[in-house]
Image (cartoon, rainbow, N blue to C red; front, side, top):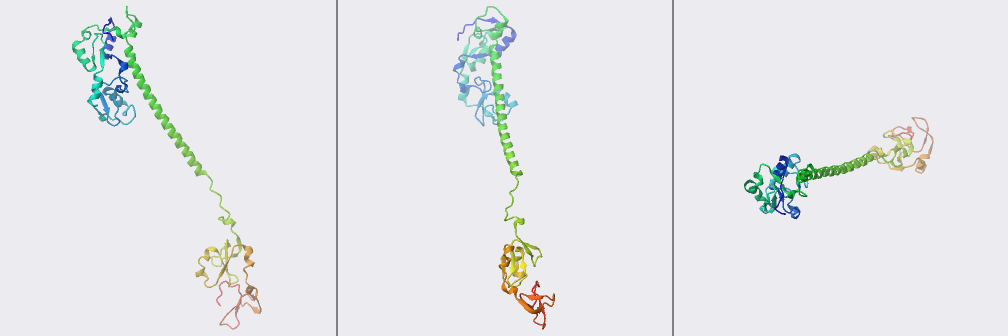
Length: 319
């Protein structure tokens, strides 16, 4: 860049702007992107390192950022201010040695870390009451001060605003990405909740015919122990012609009715198969002393009384 410039007087607002800019990089396109702050997109100024994630920012940029959002602008990890530490000296040296041009138009070129000394001690334009703008900032030489030419002199200001807009867009994009990520999680949870509700309201399977009480066969007999109607398997005593047990009582038959054997009758139609011949024996001229009916089947005779018989319908014979 030529040190020559064709100064044109500008108003005080423009001069203040140039003083704040201070310098321009001599060859901005040759600066490595690794030396740029991700917030302002400029080479680091007083860089600091995030101790947790290792990202580097300008000290002023990152402190302004974490005052509003206490997280790393790059990976969104938590970033309190006490986690910011100075970088290795070699990184500071890399940005300090970048060549800059004095933006006030004096033509000075030097290291960036020497610019402040130049501005305070050597720059003649900094001491003038009416600072000028160098032609290097203009796209073409200016003959007279026109409104459109004044606007051209503020291109650095627009550049700064564009950088700020870039940061805001990046932040908005990150927020949108976060919202979309949470929307996916919410949709997944809603789907799982619907599946859980479907499992809850599903009707239980119908009971199988074997396990259903209504499908068990009903016998024309009453359990002689619990007095309930026998349903399911009927257990019939092989000695006593009219003694039956249900399945529940039969589990304790060794105590309820010991010694005698039982036969299991699963269907009411099978009762005739298990009948013993002795049940149909007719005792002539023998009647029960209780009901006065003729004794058919086993005859229960008292061992003490001479002529005392009991009909086999007795449930618990004592003779």
